[in-house]
Structure formats: structure tokens, C-alpha cells
Image (cartoon, rainbow over all chains, first blue to last red; front, side, top):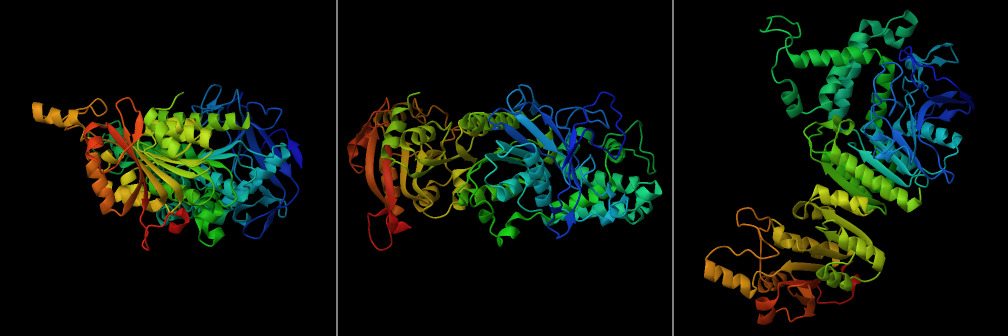
Length: 388
Length: 214
């Protein structure tokens, strides 16, 4: 195991004074769900706040599909603010004056943690499709290795939305003794057929791009930017809601008085999606997108327990607070409630909150005062109970 | 914080260390009291987002949900006691809700406002308008209390749903309680509300052991 001062990112660090965080490389091989082993494994991460003497105040944040460890500080590649700055920081619902916050880039990612864009020691070339398929549980195992290295045995709270929420559930199921409380937001215990379908559209867009070159594009100095952008555009629609799209864009035209009778982006919504796609490829790796979406598709917590979800949480003493959003059609309230019912049927204690919003799945990343109030109240009551 | 006296009367009915589901738990005052003073394993269901947040901040386990639709998700006899405090009159289908409670809880505690009180009766007689009381001061068109009943009405429903009334308390204006005969005419005229301790009549007779329903 070696602490390396600087995580290496696929894209150049452009934000001059950015905190690029830390990384630890583990020589001990990580055995994955697919049966293969991965070695060495590097985990890049950020921390905020200070670990207390009792080591009882850790909040582990699990990030979503296209997020990363830069939760509450500027992204070193894009220079944009952290993706959860309203949630995490001094005096915020996850108060960094009080708690030690850890967020690691997921296994298979492209912000410093080992993923398909990293060099395969066996070939001295980027892994590409030689990278083993990883699962949500593999991601969680890598995070557990990081916490071991940081000397943190129990986590006061594991929190995350979307794929982050899947990791939260997996944490509670895989390491019941290490989790005091868990906040899965806008997620599910399994990826639905519709969600797998959307992911497949995205993957096919990437693989149909001639620049993808069977996943070896790095060797050719190219990237399947068009395919990745289309994947992002399609996915982005699923993060919003019909009503939010209509309110934001309607049929408004973009920079013109009349429709063009052509295929230029006439409508604002087209222009918006193209921009989302374009900026995404500047910070994300196409193969990483394939691998991480696959990990979500494979997620089915009940399957590990003969189809009985309640059994996944047997033995968990964690307190859960599940949060869903009324207009989220990617991870609808019904999916979140299934988790809540499974927890109710086991010995775990669970609260469930459904936040009224028309902003769709993305609501967990947006300014939602009720969500902040829920998280603040829950986390501080847990903190009080453990004396953190 | 002192507990509202009708809630204190409910709390008094709850056995120490039991598993309790409080349906319509509000801001969680009763649940918190039961956990602190009776070491119960307490869960709640509450419709209002604001109240759920208040409960979560208190460290309680509360599901945001609706008594009319969500009780079906709970296993039979999952709780020692199911509580429905000042909520049945706001449900869409009180009879179904009562049946669900009798199924989920080995015992059920229900408190309700009494629309048979003489002031309510007099108000309708004298004013000819739908009565508004201190506790329920809504207009007929905006009230969430869509199924108000009298003590006699509820006793009737209990009989129809195979519930056995084990205890009945009359609740006075300031929340003070006293034992009553559920079928007597007096409380239905003079009590502001009532609290009932119920259990389900089992198929093979009226057994008293709670384990009979497991």
C-alpha cells in the first residue's frame, strides 16, 4: 500500500489552485464479483473536516454515475464548484465543522481511481475492454479498503443518491457492523428493465462511434466524443421530468426568430442537450461510462439473497433514512418504498421521506430545502446518539 | 415536555418493551414519549412531510405515508400495539383502516373526537349549520375530517368489524380521561372524545392470549 501525493487524472488539471485530493495504491489484489482479481488498485479520494479522536464522526459519501470525489470543492478539470456544495460544508446539513467527510472516486471511474483508462501492468497499455467488469459491491469493497487505510472502522453515516444510493444499500448489506446509519436517496435495490434499456442505448451510442475502435481509442489518440455525447444526452433526459423540461424550455427557439427547416438546433432544449453532451466528454472517459453503467445494470441486492431483499439487511443495526422525489421516474418512489418495506421486515429501523418536487431524478443534486432539512435532522440525531 | 393528557392516557395502555406502530404519529411526541418511558420499539406513519422531518430529527423511525393505502404493506401481527390517534376521522375508508390495524397489531388503540357531544348536537339544532368545535374548527368544505363519528357510531363499527373492545375511556374537554361503558348513552353526550383499546376477535372464539393471533 502506498500513499501517492497526486492522483493522476485522465484529463489535465486546468483549475490552477484546485485541491486535487489524495490517492492510495493498494498492492494487495482485489477479488472482484466476476471472479477476476485487480492489482494494483488505486483509490482517489477527497476528505473534508477532521476525524475526531474517537474516530466516530465519519460521513462516507458515495457518488453517482458521472460524479466524482469533488463533493464540496472545485473540480480540478472543469473548475466548477463541487457537486454537493449546498449539502456538504461548514454549517451545511452535512456539517464539515463537525463531521469527517470522505468521498472516493468509484472503482472503474476516471478521476484517479483504477478504471479502464488506467494502464494495465500486464500489457503496459490502457486496460480498455481488458478491464474486468466491476459491480457496485466491488466499488464498495474498494471504499472499505480506503477506510481501512484511513483507520476508520465504523462509519457514522453513508449517504448517496442514485448509483450512490445503491452503494449505500450495498454498504449496509455487505458491512453491517461498520455502518451506523445510511441515507439512500433516489435509488433502488435493483436496476429496472427500463433503466437497463436506457443504459444500453448509451452504450450502443458509444460503441457505434468509429472513434471508439473496440475500446482502444487511447492507443489511437482519439476518443468517441460523439458517441459519449449522445449517451449523455439520452441519459440527461431521464434525469429530468417532462414538466421541468416544459417549464424550462417549452418550444422556445434558440437564437432565432423562426424554425430553420433544417437540422440545426432550432429549439432551446436541443441546444441545451448538445451542450450537456459536449461538456461531458471533456471530463469523462467513454469506457468508464460503459463499465459504470454496467455495474448499475448488474445491481440486484435481493439476488444475492435468493430473491429476498429483507434478508440482505438481516443483521444490520443501522438506522436508515430513505428519500425519494415525487417526479423521479428513473428511480420512482415505488422502488424506494420497496427498500423501505424490506427494511421494515428486517430488524433495521427505517424512516422514509418523499420530497414533493417537479425536478425529476436530478432533484437530489439541486436546492431542495426539504431534503436538506431531512438530512440535517437525521444526521444530527445519529451524531448525538453516537456522541460525535 | 409534558405529553398532551389524552396521549398520556394512550401511553398508559402500552405495555413496556412492546413493538408499537403509531399511525398518523404527527410530530412524534407520543412515540418519543413511549420510547423514552416505556422502552418500546416504536415506528410511525405520517402523511405530512413537515411532521416526518420533525420525527426524523427526533431520531424516530417514521415512514411518510397514508393510512388508507400503506397499511397493507405490513405483515399480520407485526406489532404488539397499533395506535391510531385522532386520525380515523380523516381517513378515506375508516372501516378498512380499522380492519388493517386489527390485523397488524395484536392490540389496537384508537382515539377519536366525539361528534355526539351535546354542544355539537345543539349547534346543528340551533344554527342549522355543520358544527365546528374547538378541536375541529374547519368549515364543512375544507375539513380533512371527512368521516366524523360519534362514540356510538364507532362502537357500532367495532362490532361490525369483529373488534372486541377491551377498554374504553371518555376524554373530557381538557384531555382528562375516565373509564366508560362504551355502549352507555352518557359519554356519547358528554365526552369530547374517546379512547378504545381493541383486539381482533379470533375465528375460534374470544381468546385473551395475544399469541393467539400470531
